[in-house]
Amino acid sequence: MNVAIIPARGGSKRIPRKNVKPFCGRPMIAWSIAAALESGCFDRVIVSTDDDEIAAVAEKCGAEAPFRRPAELSDDHASSLAVIAHGIEWLAKHARRPDLVCCVYATAPLVRAQDIRRGLEAMLREDCEFAFSVTSFPFPIQRAVRITPGGRVEMFQPECFDCRSQDLEEAYHDAGQFYWGKPEAWLEEKVIFAPHSVPVVLPRHLVQDIDTPEDWLQAELLFQTIASRNQSENREGTTE
Image 1 (spheres, rainbow, N blue to C red):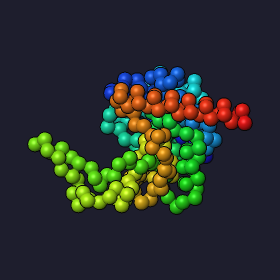
Image 2: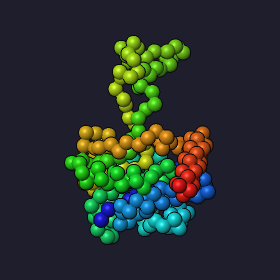
Image 3: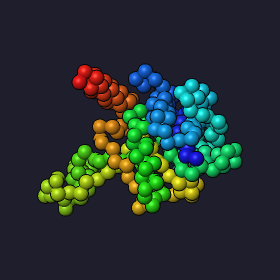
Image 4: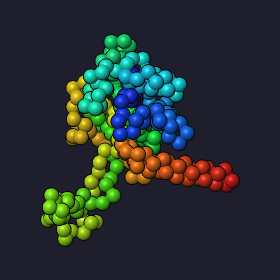
């Protein structure tokens, strides 16, 4: 049994109620639920929440919300690892322990079913504990600078000042969309960013972190642009 667990607490502060706030015509969480269901990877798609409204929205969108997350796992300091471990423990007690678990973030409206499937394929193909979405930095991190307390500038890696960008190693960061993992790895709360994990590389234009109102606006514009392009391509394909 493969299970998707979508963490969605009710206490978001920077963007209040962001998990159910309308995003391009649907509650934000609806997009993650839809991608998980469309992927065909899961026997159950479960939303882990402490909030009855979020649970009702999740169920209306086709997911389950069979339990309420305890308060100690619903504050600003609760880790995703602990939340997923709680869901696995609940499943083991009330149904059966899953074979693989995928944490899908509720605020990932650009997540695609085919990328979730790629994550499952990586878990089945590789000897790994986790497979999760990453994307590349748009600028060489070796040439990053900091602003000092005195208001001046200095490089993090000054030895790279004279290096050509194309000669520097490409770097990647967490795309914040989905994280496949073995139940044992989640329960032991193993570090995800480690050699026992494999990456599922996404193009940068499909990745947008949403923590601030500015992030939200940018994500909506990006989403609308992608949707418009897809509609145009579909129309062109129909006329050929």
